[in-house]
Length: 220
Image (cartoon, rainbow, N blue to C red; front, side, top):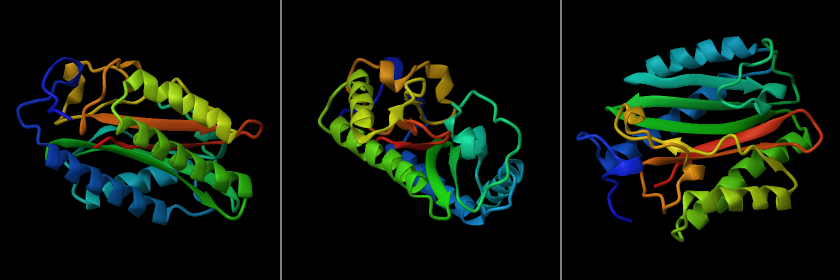
């Protein structure tokens, strides 16, 4: 894939693909560190505050989008929706972490779903979000458009027994701030996405029960 240079894939003068990869790795380290401290009995707001402390301890440049940690039924909420109340994480529960963090001037963005206890459908839902991401990522490597990626994601989610939230369709990243380039959603991009500048987001819902799962990562 060629370097992203213009239009909806424009980047700044400081952009370095390998630094994007480095930011990706640091972001995943942070997701793992935060997940390790989230335990049953903790309130969602407490997890958010502890997560922010951990990010500061890890030496981030700054947060570029709010740290989201969603418990239980709030895992169905889209990024721009507020959580309902301040739920306490249960012994058999589900939660996800979604963070956008700047490292060395480059934007990391990652999200994953975790479970407590042994609820088999919650465990399956969390695993399905990651599996669906991997399937769509594999299709991206074949050189299809962003539009095709999300059409495929929807079909695959249905075949797997889940419902894809198509209000969440991926977005740009780059050297901070990517927002000046107005890249739009990955799911609306009618060309083959270049490596290192797009986040693929997957959010699914259980067909009957009030929870879902989220997974996102850099396409690189």
